[in-house]
Length: 189
Image (cartoon, rainbow, N blue to C red; front, top):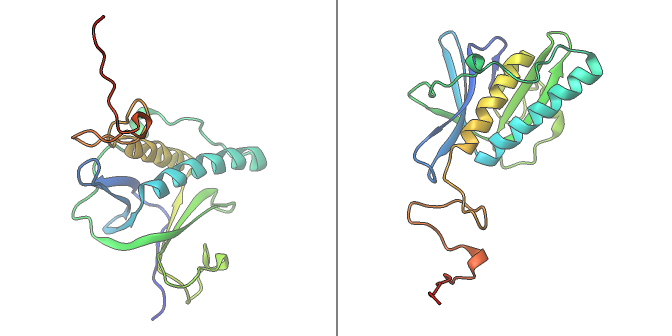
């Protein structure tokens, strides 16, 4: 069966979001354009890397092509609304691609489904019939910066971190490797 490529050239919305409680969250990217909506599942680390790489790409585009790239986005332009429900996973993301479309002057984000076979990089940002299903979203530089800002917030909104090891704390705490399994008890002198 030929691959399905969901293309959003002028999305009304492209956001990172979660479903579930901290420590048990599932991370999604969701694109909407008019009546179409596609949600893909991915790992927290993938959201973090995508956000970071978008920032790097925007800096490079500004430097090399002189594109007008905002350093920050006004707070009112960062989408803070929850994911649109129902959140129905189209696929789980395996490979991510990122590029700059000089013709439309847009950032292109492509997310490919997990597959058993090794993904040839020539499949990324290509319309070939062979390969994993994909979600391809075109974003203005300001839209890409707003996406990255929200994605960073979504990633950072999880569990509190242990002040000693910076590992995530569960509701009942955690066994901190910096304490070697012991809790220091202070006695009055």
